[in-house]
Amino acid sequence: MRAVTLAQVPGSPEVTEVEVPRPEAGEVLVKVAASSVNGFDLATAAGYLQGMMEHRFPLIPGKDFAGTVEAVGEGVEGFAVGDAVFGVDAKAHLGTGSMAQYVAVPTAIGIAHRPYGVLVRDAGALGLAGTAAFDGLALLGPLKDRTVLISGATGGVGAIAVQLAAARGARVIAMAKSGSESGFVSALTDAEVTVIDYLQDVTAQVRAIAPGGVEAVLRTSPATWPSSPRSPATAAPSPPPSPSPRPRRTASCRPP
Image (spheres, rainbow, N blue to C red):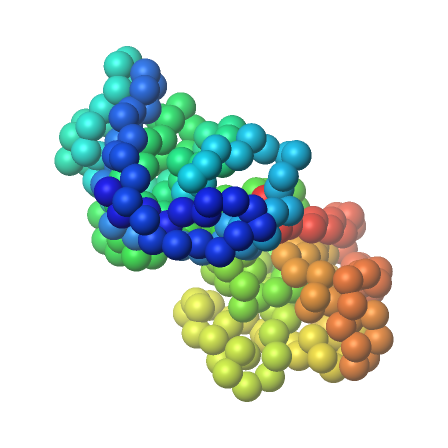
């Protein structure tokens, strides 16, 4: 099969021919129709994960996938050949990822049937960013009728978090540059989302929208959190206090 491979790390990816993997017990073989590139994959190619996870070469990167089940391993239940699936390659090592025509993945975690109506290209980009957004918002507790500030709203995690938070009834303030980025965020959902420019005075903009402050903060990108009115930095200042009796909660959330 054709696959994107790394002969070493740090290294440059190439398209090569490798053997089709065989699903082991508890695994299914997925014929990949869509995958995506995450920061995790860039970190792998740059060699940043050496010493943190086992690397098997030639290394096929890729975590997200969407496709159809081609074969099932021993003991697999709930999945059959031909099933439309999507998810995240959750194996503990690096080297047999989803940037290939086929990927073998465990069924115990990281795979689900693709819901009817979800495009395969969307499902193929949902895994890592989607779970990071979902888990980050879960840390904030109930969101209905609460004001939530989300940084990095144009990124993979932030864009999904904006949609999820709005769907759960939150009043969403999203951080993005003015212009096309702001328009992108506004078009993510039919719900009302207030977009502020993180290159300007974030505190002043938030106070103008929510004079008492926000009740929850999801920080998906330190690069979009300014330490001064005009200068982005990685350290986050404390947002204004909330008048709500419920305590303000903050979560920092980026995919692994």
